[in-house]
Length: 139
Image (cartoon, rainbow, N blue to C red; front, side):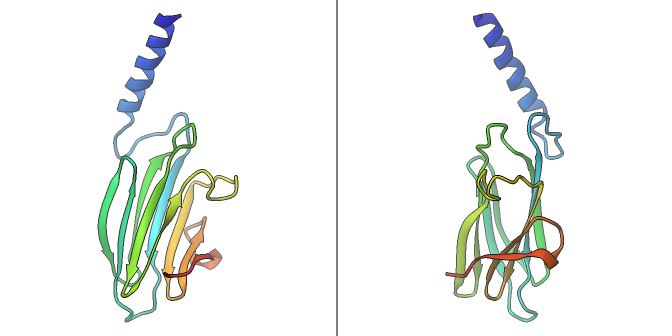
């Protein structure tokens, strides 16, 4: 029994390392893409962002109006993945989770679009700004 458990652990570790590259394939979980978009009005200045998870710090970014950045990851098969972002626009700011298991009230999507607008932060589950829903107001 212990040998079997050890073999399973070694195999799991091997596959985890084998697919730890940027363009990995997700075997036991869905591949998720998060996009952050500066959808602020023209001439309103840049959006400062910092996004991270427990294991991956995506760094600070400056997005001009209309600019975006995205990243893709494999969701943890036990639904333990959490990414968060902190956005700043002038004197306004907002820190929030951009991905966790409870984000869509039990409905899982493979794409999440977070858009900063003048009155707050909006979320969509397609690469279109037509179906965005306001989730947060600026602090």
